[in-house]
Image (cartoon, rainbow, N blue to C red; front, side, top):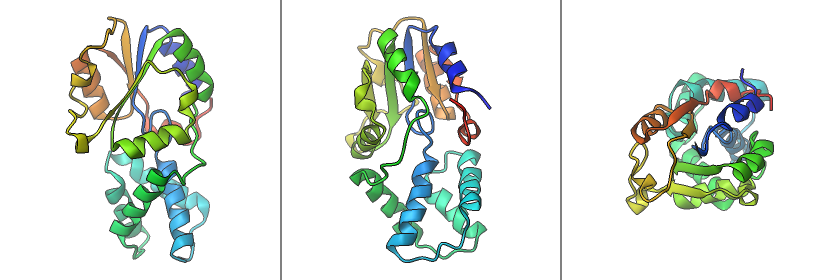
Length: 210
């Protein structure tokens, strides 16, 4: 398990620092935990699972691949033989993120981002729907940090998504750059861009010390 302070210290040697958002600057599966809890309340489903097994089960599915919410919830329901409407559950998750109801989400990078943004060129590059990603950034309180640029690559806007690197066109990026992300797509993006890459493992976020 890595210490985030040591990761921040390592990447601070770079002039230009690029972050992915989901499962990099915060734990995305926290959303899924909240969605299940709110889903239980909204549809009066009996919460027959203790918090620890629920936490462990979602972590197990999330770390196995970049499945997306539909597959994660589907695997969860199959494992515990639960008859949820998966489409409704995913739609409910999208509603919560879009409307900003998952207000308890936080970033373990908070105390480091202010210093990194002050002393370096710090960017966020994320694939996703604009409204959802902007609401995540708001809920994380990232408006208080001076990011050089935040790039949301939205499929609905027909943007080139990562791992394509066209979003970097026109940026004055030095040869001393690094990308921090959690997926193979992030790794491929960094290779194509000519950046160094630091992999954030989802497992590191289960109880990651600051």
